[in-house]
Each structure stands twice: as structure tokens, then as C-alpha cells.
Picture 1: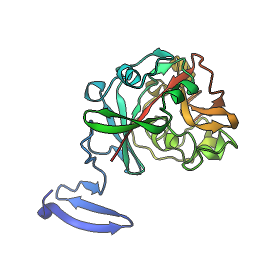
Picture 2: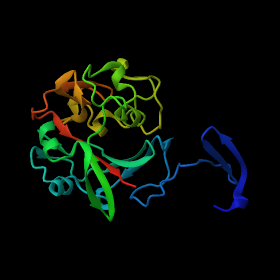
Picture 3: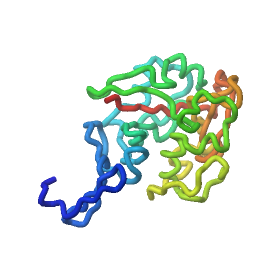
Picture 4: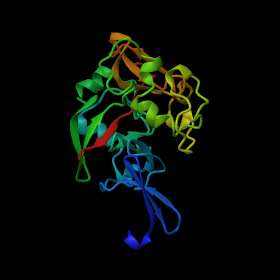
Length: 252
């Protein structure tokens, strides 16, 4: 960008708005400058919560290769070549499986592979990524075991990323008690079938999340009867509905 292209610069809170010569509005931080694969410009949102688009597995990693690399063998492979969803979240770039890439898998098995909270890292294309599950509860409530639904879901990573890309954004949610409505709407329009966030979509639509459920004997799952749903089940269960939707978070 040349300085002469800038017609006006206004300071708006912590962000800088740049109005270019072609009248396109850019926001500081709206571009991925990390060199990670996939689209570089945000479709919607900002670097605290935003969506860049899809990344094909040929440019990143397949589900089968990821499971092999971390030694995760429980469950049944599916959608190994389905694209990844590239997001920004809390200033980081991360990749989330568009669909669950294994089903019939327990939370305990994922935890045994050290792939729940980001303790483990892997190298893909010369870059380092933390591997973890999504957060189904509000940030800072990951160790809270008081409930699995309602207000505790509203500020979650799941809500901030998965809901704005869904066709029901911003206000047409089935489980309104779990959602700060209206949400953002990034005009992407994925369905529950697209994202595998409803039991009608097939095996593995219940995405394991990091947190306790209602009590420490349970773990949270999201995407049971729709993208806004939240429930909890025993972490040792590996029924056909249980799914692995990994997050690969780019390390600085």
C-alpha cells in the first residue's frame, strides 16, 4: 500500500480505519500476515473473531494425516479431505475442521493423545500449531462445572466463530438461551449439514469440546440438534454420535 493511496485515516477506538482510493474500507488487522495457508483477507468479523474462508486439505493437512501424526486411532475416519475453516480468534489465526473428521470417539481418547487444550504442537508446512478442541463455554469458564448450557455458552469460541457463518445468523436460533442474539452475521450461510452440526447430518455430529459439563463427570458437546445446541455426556463414551472436530491454532 502506497501512502498516496490513503485518502483519510481516522482513529476509531483501538482500530485504525483506512479509506483507500477505490473507496474500499480496510481495518487494521483485517489481513493475515502470518504466511499461513488459505485466504488472507477476512470475509467478516475482525481479528478478535473473524472468518477468512475455506482452506483445502492439499494446502494444509488431511484429517487422516493429522490423526496419524498424533497417534489417534480410536473411532472411524470420515471427511478426511473436507476443507478447513480458517478463522481469527483473540488475535490468533486458527483452522477448524469444517466437519468432524472422526466419529465413534471418546473425549478420553482425544485427551490421551494430548489434543484437548493445546498442550501439544505439530509442524505443518514449516509452521507450528497447537492442536486442541474448541471451547464450548465462555472464555475463562473452561474449568467451570456448574452448567453446560445457557449463559455460560454465550461468550464461547464456538458461538463467536460457528454461529456467524451459519444460515440462521443473526437471530433465528433454535436454542436462544445459549446465544447472545442477534449474533454477528458474516453472510456465509452454511447449513447444519454443511458444518455437520445436527444429528440428522450423520455420525459424529456431536463435537467434543474442552470443558466440563454439569459436574466434573461430564464433558461438553456442541452441535447436537443444531449449531446453537449444547449438552454434556460422559467423556468415556464413544458412541457413533461422538465426533472429533480439531482446532489447529497457529503459534506466533
